[in-house]
Image 1: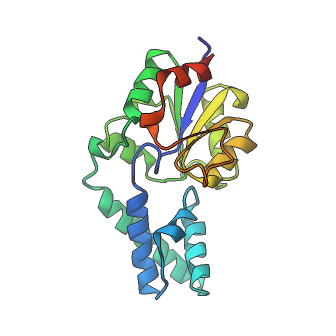
Image 2 (image 1 turned 30 degrees about the vertical axis):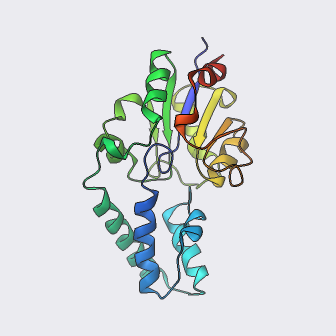
Length: 217
């Protein structure tokens, strides 16, 4: 079998921390008198913290100076981290670990490519950090998805050409980033949202070993 790079996003792909991001952002929005719904939260998937705050402020047509923005960004992260304190392996989404195990058993390379700046502690708390040959997160890149920087850097660390990399993503921006990088995009979520992905599955429980084998060949 050939050696490929399998790059995973974190939030909404490996673990369901999206709900914690939503609660933390909703708290900020409520303070500012902005209605912030789960549908609005979809727009923040795969987007940096700074850009996410700008999107929320735009929703409420609120202009703010950098000092206030910095305060809200710190608050959001502190609230988010407070939700992560009790994280364990139960937070891993169904079907993910069997895929990681299958890739390892077949000597494939695995990387994380996430906008999250808390990726490493989350992987440690959930007990799966040992599966990853490389980790690229929000601390390592300057450009947010759909810029492909995070995925290109992951492939580079694994010494694999972009066209031999496969990306698992749950966000539109992430799928676009994988496509821009000339990588194979696998969307995890709804077809109507992730229609730009080459392959789409509702979740990892729908991914069979034969499909993974077809990507390796």
